[in-house]
Image (tube, rainbow over the protein chains, first blue to last red):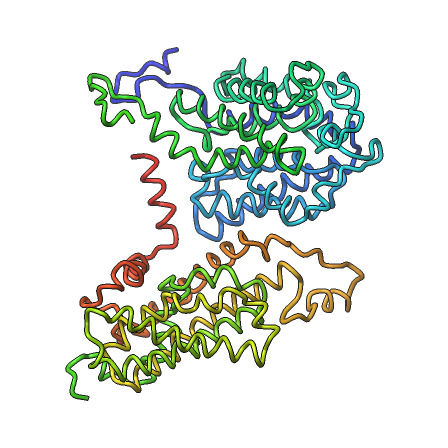
Length: 314
Length: 263
């Protein structure tokens, strides 16, 4: 307590939170989903996670060295990017997919724009979409030893019989390494919420507006089984709690965060229900990332003591 | 040369290399982005588009330069467009007759050469103020600069996005000599986003090479640019980019973004 109060120029409130600490919390929160993914999909998933994380960290290190900048890998943000990217890959993807994705995420999306805090788009999701467009057949092939065939969402979209709901919640379905287990992801999310790393503004408004959207437009009406499958069967939990909440690429203003979440919910609904593919979380979030500067501009709070003029308010 | 214009006294070769390197229309002036991004899916398409544009540019520069005292100042833009459009029509018919494969590959982008801002830009800023011979060399330099840029972008995109170069599966041929591994094309590079990636990377590379040259004392500033103060049409296209380029740290765009975010 002594050290936290210091009579000096501002800032007066000091916190023990550092970037590396927050990033380590995120890694810890992702561990349940990662461990579940490895047990569920086999050893190849573990290799894929390891090589992707190694690639992102190494890319950042080499870039910093080449550009003669301070080595920034000790803030663990590159490791978080690598882990998130790996959790977004199909379990049987070849290892070089992780390498290409890792290099793209760090080099193009993050470091070329100035490194942590400057990237306009979530690096892991940018890389996932890069891979998805480049290697569509590999990135949408979820066959593995344990499960063959479509992801739950694809099955529902095609009108086939979806897996049991309980399997989707626990995660015993086909999908990317980290997205299948709703329970493991929610444990991690709860940890982050308790530690104060994230709050419910973005994920809450995201999930709520998504539910409202599919209630209105999916044509299934008030079908709890369908709604829960939509929540548990795809990448929504991973996206809403771990990627849409990324400090760098979400709006700073509180109202802006609600707008951001609602936008993501609507876009995800549009992609899933009206789009050709069954999944749409990644594209929704990177589209939302691009809108963040505009959202911040509109939702900028009025400074204390200043009146909100009606002309500016629009 | 009766004109007191300093550009008129330049050697033709200087004018030529000005377009090829120092004021490369794609990498420095960032003109003609529409065909640059759209048709460079392969090296052959880039080369074809570049050479077609070069032909039109040389001919239109020559005619506009010949007519520069006759064309009234107020109607110069329509007059330029009529001249350019007639050459584009000729080239289009020739391509359709003799190289139909290239004609179908370039498609709509051949008639769009009429509104290519490189051609109008050079007519406005160079050919309408300079004698015929320098104007022809300016057209040649600018056109070949455009061709080199488009071919380079096309080659990189084709190599990464399809594993081929001028239609030859080069990567698989090389890999086949050592291993049985097959190259999996990164197909985003033949799609629209790939065009932006490759253009940005090559522009950065070109900036670096140019700065290295300047550091070595090769006074690239010896050549007067086409962006003289009386060039109205150029101020919002070509010169704007030059100004960015002068202080041109590659990170300046990112820095500007950072400042904006903080501000």
